Image (tube, rainbow, N blue to C red):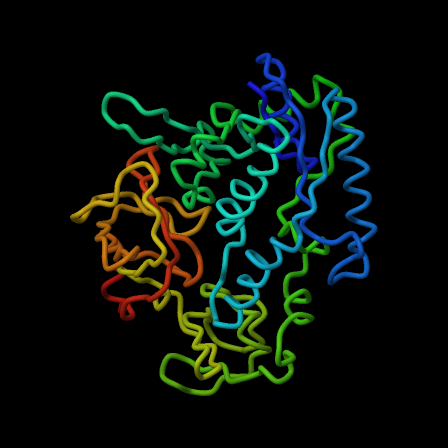
Length: 369
């Protein structure tokens, strides 16, 4: 089949292209330009982006595949960056990859790949696809073989049609194996160092990025830091600079560690407390997408992940209203963060997921023992 590989320049997209080519597929690369080459919000962005594209072209040439550059920064700005900024203004901690994958990567980029004759779009995500069988007529999304690298969490927003066009060759391999392939094939010198930064913030400093984009300016957004009893402990730099569970950078002296427990955008308050005050037993989820199963008509037992590195915890997931759900954990979970995704699993099978909104009442220290 003819497969477009979403090329970022990293080892994972390289491994994806190598595997597909070895399997005999007709492979070409396609790269999303997510920022204008004029530089965007960072004075260093233009040089960084041009250097990345030159390295990517060299890599594609060594691979012996064609590479198309597709300008998608206007759609990306509208669908990902603007909601990212608005979420922080509302006291949320958004995950831009969750928005990008269904709307941009497996939305607009998939369309561009099809215009170039592709049957499928392959990415370097560590996840697996389960084809329909006797037990289900739906395409399933599963966790990767490598649990430390599994990225199914970021893909819960994909539709059945999108899953049908997706290819994840790395889902049955480990990161170590992919790195070994790159080294053995002589590609390592062409690869950049692994980056954990947000793709549209080349500098890696998201707070500086937000400061340039926020309106009104950050100095006008300063407000009180209160403890759980309402006592004034200090002043915050703008709620966009804080997230639930944060300990460092509070600028508060205390005899015991303090953490951000709640962010209250309506009153411009950052509220802090002790570690035990971070635990929640229930959360509400909106914009739920049921992936591998139809929308259930009754509660389902699942293991729920509340952030990518969170170990899935047993919970009951109850559908609520239109595209909503209530998650009730068997044991309270620490630092449930509004704006992040809650993703539901049955073993390796990803059932669905949505965006965390409300939190339940505070869990007392005795309830957490």
